[in-house]
Length: 182
Image (tube, helix red, strand yellow):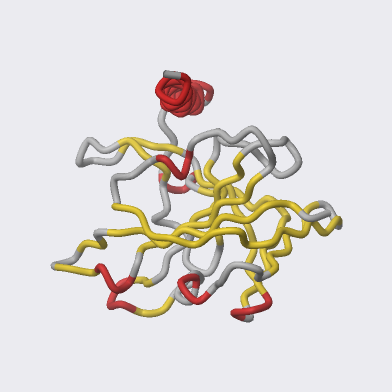
């Protein structure tokens, strides 16, 4: 019973965070406002990755979808606006493309090669925050559980699983979970 209540509470929290983000701007953002540099960087030494972190906001698309706008990011990693930021004690979620148009490798192309025990370093305002990978897995493209709030500080990275590409769509997401170690 407690598990079900907790899951329902998590779903409601994500929905509320989404609506707050949508209406806090008083209108949907335009593509030009889709991302804002944060000054923070993400580093994953095991795959030789260092990339700037930008904030990606939610917007309405012409097809009616309302979601975070990743259309403007290429070599950047996107922080999902409206979720926990570093040091706030919750689930900080960062997304990035595995591939760009034409299946060209992008920032998270090798995210599926990250393993439990690897270190992830975020530099924010000149301060290094270190995380250790505790889990890696894939989820269905529609699974939003990776966005749920957590009771402790957690870093969640995700990207499209390149092995799941089928007829122009990626059916799964690669996910990396890490916990703070400093």
